[in-house]
Image 1 (cartoon, rainbow, N blue to C red):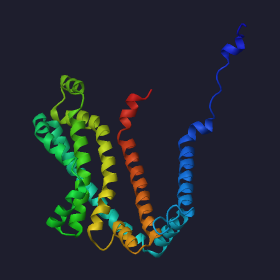
Image 2 (cartoon, helix red, strand yellow; image 1 turned 60 degrees about the horizontal axis):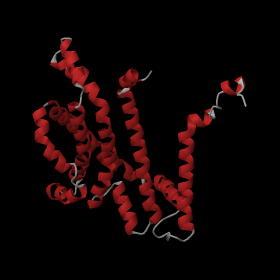
Image 3 (cartoon, helix red, strand yellow; image 1 turned 135 degrees about the horizontal axis):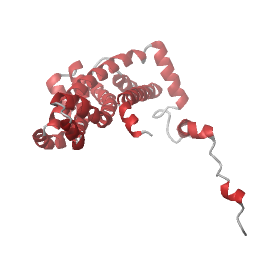
Image 4 (cartoon, helix red, strand yellow; image 1 turned 180 degrees about the horizontal axis):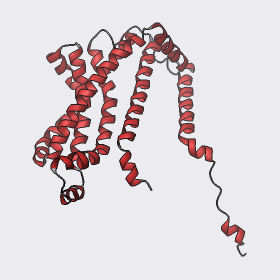
Length: 273
């Protein structure tokens, strides 16, 4: 049977515009709802005792009460201050040393075995070392955060600077650009997109390492709050502290994403049609 002209030129049906635009939000909301229902069902069905796992509603109630009465909210600021201080120190040191090592080929070769060793070394194995040298005060907690954040930033910075396309450098030299101009206008802009994954990973590591550091000792902090709640079998409060860490992590990731979007806008301008 011959195919009609109408059948040939009829385009396929376009997908729903609303779903196409908000599919990530919709699927994310469905996935979150399914997770919460499964969480509630595991506890309500008696598969796990509420002594070990609180329901979502009890966790959220403990979270709201902790913020309202100050028992949880008072623990947030000390942890954020430690994490932010350690992250900033690691950011400055990691990018500075990473640029230096990545810019000089001989430094890359000398640093390679050291990077290979320390980047794979467990932070938990080093906790006693920090305690021995710095005690259980603020210095050791910040130092642990610096250590956890430094390596992702440093490794990415070394690779980013060392991996800048030679054709860009040669083109700049051909046009008569000096060393300072090449470094500030060619090397750094080209390296920033490759450095940012390390910065985002370091931001996530900051709170992961901080909780481990706070468990060593101290008076205030989210890690201490979680540990004290666990020791007292205050299960909803314990999971409320964990929920707080997760929400802070989401906020930090959003900030890092916005910063990356802003600082790498020039790259999108080159690649987008």
